[in-house]
Image 1 (cartoon, rainbow, N blue to C red):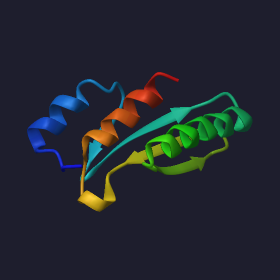
Image 2: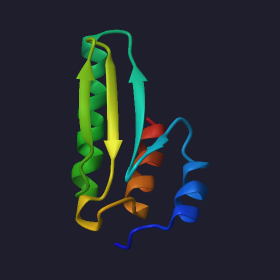
Image 3: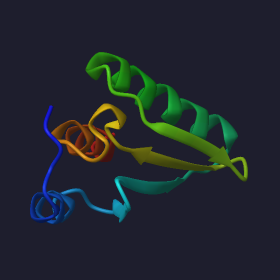
Image 4: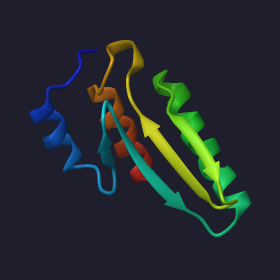
Length: 92
């Protein structure tokens, strides 16, 4: 999987609502009703990540907030895989 150029990143970023660029990764914060809803979301993300063999950094904080960070570590930056997973997550 090839690392994306800055122009490609900006274009793809415009198609994944709510995701923001931070260095060599993209991230998004999600807010839920309660702790259980947050955990259910994390499990759904985990299931999709396993299918893709592409695993985000997941931070559950304040009992109902989940921050996801996507990057392809083996490529040292963002690839199509990151944006594909972001699209899937946005469609939950």
